[in-house]
Length: 222
View 1 (cartoon, rainbow, N blue to C red):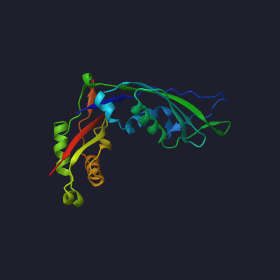
View 2: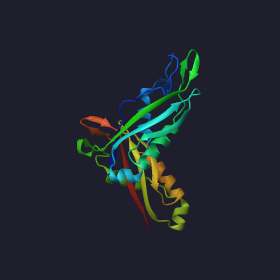
View 3: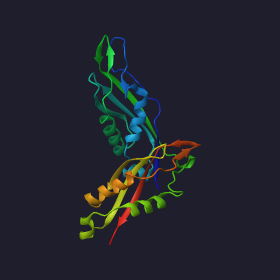
View 4: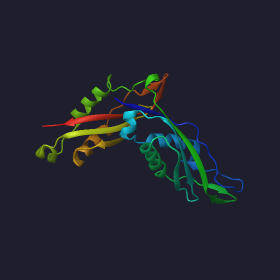
């Protein structure tokens, strides 16, 4: 099973213009901006070429927290790989609204620059496990749990599917995504099953649980 662990380091907060002293800095999810990188890492769906090539490096993203709390003007200042850069922009752009900065009682726009580090940690981590196994055990569970839609059975639809998903530090499966589909109905059913996965034993790096992204190939034939 291919995995890519994401290490999101310090969020650098830099107003993009000179303004009066901020009375209140922007907040994400009711807390400081430092929690935003974790949200980004949890919502990234890794492109298949990034997963296969285990690409790593640092991306630097610039974005504006507007006075209405929305995120705008998301740009990649330094990229890692085109498809991964595009995915980071997508995730940052989809951010829930922030609580805007305040200056002299009025909301203010603030520009942030955020570095995100992607590191291949295969050599220093223990993989996540499912029912005492890994990819093979999970694949068995997925295939045994699928309820084939009537149309799939009737037309005997076959093909190769690739699904990616994230296993959090707590062993919870999140963000299942069809990278390569077979049929909309079958794709939807696979997403349902993967989303309902029992808990995993999370991957660890030097004894510390970490979040990883996995890809799972599935073959359907008659």
